[in-house]
Structure formats: structure tokens, C-alpha cells
Image (cartoon, rainbow, N blue to C red):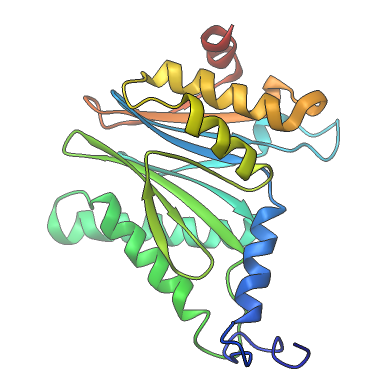
Length: 231
């Protein structure tokens, strides 16, 4: 395959875009992030891997507010994720100003995926090495979307990206239920992270947020909330 991975615009003889595949592998090496739709809302949970014991855990941000009713978390090259999430925040605000209404989550996800896809089609730039989970509540209905480096997106009830995603998904296949509450969702997500991280697990590493269906308001949670919920 040597020579066919020099640019994202060149197909290999067997029809693959190798630079895009490398970007997907970069996502696999990122820290775990989880999204889950519950009966009363939607949640995000992410692992903040602390590379130095002197780092202040709260300074490592893995979950972001995009709009009042939309949140996101990213895995892979987080500098790429920051750029795309800031783009999503701008799109959401522009929609408010133009239409005097909030943007629906699916439309926002499509806009971000269009940007991702463009970087797989034009030369002179590499693909975004990031996958992003977007969650939102539109007219009382919670939704979860995963965006890939390719520009593809999928809607899920529960999913995981990054380190240990396959193992986490297997846990969800067995234990996830659509009638789970937000607090039940946090318990299952933390349980899955414990399973994957094993001895490296620390509740201080966990970042989380939720949006409840009746409120449609993004809420970040702290360590005390998680300790109370999962005990």
C-alpha cells in the first residue's frame, strides 16, 4: 500500500482511503467516551485520562456544551475536536440569530459531518482524527449521534467510542434498557468504565453531563454527583 497513503484523496487499488482509515485508528487510541439515551433524557460520560498526577482534573475538559439543548464529547485528537465543536457552537448561534429558534440536533450533526467529509475529498489537508458524540433533546425527544472521521454519522440508543469501545458496547448489549432513568444510565456507564480501565479507574477521571427531556437544558455534573449516584 506504500504510496497510496500519501494523501487522503488517493484511492488504493482495492478502493480504500488509507489516510481516512488511519484517522479512525487514531480515534481508537483516544480515551473512552459514552453516550446513552434514557427514558427521561440523554447522558454523556467521558474518561479524562490524567497524564500527570499534578494536573488539576477539572482543567481537563472532555464534555462540552454546544447549545442549551445540545452537548458533545470527543475522542481522538482533541485539538481537532475542539475546532469542530467550536464550529458547532457557532452554527447553533447563527441558527438562533437567523431563525429565532434553536437548531435541531440532527441538522447540526449533518453540518459538522459535511466539514469532516470535505477534509477527505480535497488535497492539502489531513482528515480530522476525531469522533464526536452529540446528544440533544428536540421537542422533548432525546437523541444521540456518533460522527466518524469519514463524515458518516449514525444515531444510537447507547454507544461508546475510543479506548475499550468494543467491550463497553458488549456490556450495553446485555444491560442497557430503554426505560432506564438518567441516574441508572450514569450507573451503567461508570460500571462499564470500571470494567475497561480496571485498576486505573478513578472517579475523579470521569466527566459527565445530562440533558433531561422536560427541561432541555445542558447540565454538567461533578464528582460528588457521581459518587452519590453510583454508590
